[in-house]
Length: 514
Ligand code: B12
Ligand code: SF4
Image (cartoon, rainbow, N blue to C red; front, side):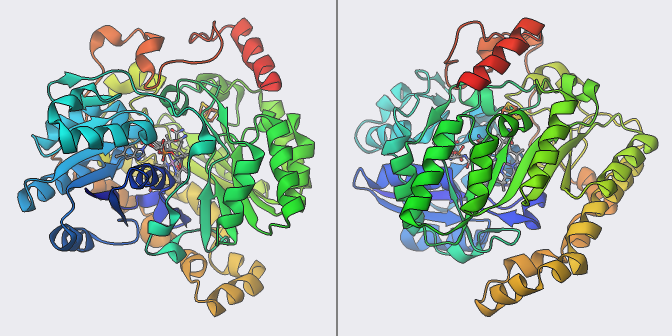
C-alpha cells in the first residue's frame, strides 16, 4: 500500500529558535517500510498545505497517518483529515503521537468520521499491525493494540521491546537542511533513551511512557550517529544520561570512532550533579548546548510542580554547567497568578545570570496530573492556545497586562541572546553558515518581535473556535493514578502518586541507582 506520514505545521515557539526533524514519525515510517509498503513523509513544518493536497492528488496514498505530539495542532489535523476524505474518500486516515493518545476520543468526534482511528502509544509495533488489518480485514482494526475508534477501544498499547531494533527513515525527508537549533544549523535528532522515571505534575512524558526507562545500547547509538550526515545533533531524550554509565559508554565509543559532531541535550540539575564526569567528558567530544528544566526559582514553585529537587541543587547544577563552558538554557514556568512585581523579580534574575532563560506559561495538558486538578478553571478550551505561550488559566493581572509583562520578560532573552548581540559573538560561525547556504540560524536572530507580541497573543484569543477540548469527567477529579497512563505503568512498585517524604527519598535513590 502507499503510506503517507504527515507532521503538522510549526507552532509559535518553533518559529524562532529551532525546527527539528520529526523523529517519531520517521521511526513509524521505517517500521511501515520494513513491511514492504511504499512510504513518503511530508513535514508541514517546512512545506505547506498546498504541497499536502498536491501529494494527495498526484501520489494518491491509500493511507494517511498524522503525527500529533502537540495539542495545539489538533484543529489543523482535524481539518486536514476532513479535506483528505473530501478529496479522496477511500483514503484510510489515522492519527497517533503523544497528544493524540490523550485526546483520542475527542479527536474522532471532532473529525466526524474523517479520522478512521487513533492509535495510542508508541507507533512502531501497532502501525504495521493496523496496516495489515486495513489491507486484509477491516474488522480486525478493533484488535490492534492502542486503537480507538468511534465504536470503542481495542487492547492496551504496546511497548517497543528493544530500542536497538529501531531505525528512523531519515532519508525520506525532502528538506533536511531546514532543521536546526540555534547555531547547530543544520541539525539532526537522535534518541538514546525513552521515558522518564520522575513524575512532575505539569508533564505528560511519564504518563505516556508508563514511567518506564529504556535505553539504546552504546553500539547501536554510535552506529546510528555515524550514519547521520548533519554536523549538529539534538538529543531528544527527556532527561539525558540518567544512567551515567550509558552516557559515558556512548561518549567513549564516539571518541574511539572519531565522530566529530556538536550536541544539544536536555537534563535535570540533580542528574547533572550526579554524573559530572559524564557531562565533562561530553564537553570534550562536542557538547555545545545544555537545557536544564529549572522551572521555578522558589521552593514553593518547585514543590507545586513536584520537581523533586531543591532550589539549592538547581543553583549548584547551574554553577557546574557554567564551569563546563557550554551554552546553558533553562526553562521557567510563568504562573498565571504572577503580578507585575513577580515578573520584575524574574526579569532582574534573568538579567543577572549568563544563561538563556526560556519562559513558558503554566498550561495543564491532558495526560498531566495538573489537567485533572486545574482544568475546571480553564478560560478557554481552544486547542490552539495550548502551546505554553498563551494563558489558558485565569490570570491575576488583566490578560493584556499579563501578556505585556510576559513578553517584556521574554525580551530579556532577545536582548541578550538574539539580534546584534548574538551576531557579534557568533560572527565567524554565522559567516560560515551563510557560505554553506545555511540561513536558519541567521534568520532566527531577528524574528523575535514578529512572533512575540502581546497584541498578537491577545488577538489569538479572539479567533473563532471550531473545536473545543473536553474536560476530565468530574468523578476523576480525585486522580486515579492508573487512569493517567497511556502505556501501562512499569517499573518499581510503590511509585503511586504521592508527595510524601518517603516517596521523594525513594525517587532520589532510584535516580542514583538507575
Ligand atoms: C523533541 C521534543 C520537541 C522538539 C520537537 C521535535 C519535533 N519536530 O517533533 C522541540 C524542541 C521543537 C519541541 C517543541 C515543543 N514541545 Co516538545 N517535546 C519533545 C520531546 C522531548 C521528545 C519528542 C521526541 O522526539 N520523542 C522521541 C520520538 C521517537 O517519539 P515521539 O515523537 O513521541 O513519537 C513516538 C510516539 O509519539 C508515536 N507517534 C508519533 N507520531 C506518530 C504518528 C502515528 C500515526 C502513530 C500511530 C504514532 C506516532 O510513535 C513514535 C515512536 O514511538 C517530547 C517529550 C517526549 N518524551 O515525547 C516533548 C513534548 C512532545 N513537547 C511538548 C511541548 C509542550 C512542546 C512545546 C509546545 C513547548 C516546549 N516545551 O518546547 C513546543 C512546540 C512544538 C512545535 N510543534 O512547534 C510536550 C507535549 C505536550 C502536549 N501534549 O502537547 C511534550 C510531551 C513534553 C512534555 N514533557 O510535556 N519539542
Ligand atoms: S523530569 Fe522532565 S521529563 Fe521527567 S516528569 Fe519531570 S519535566 Fe517531565
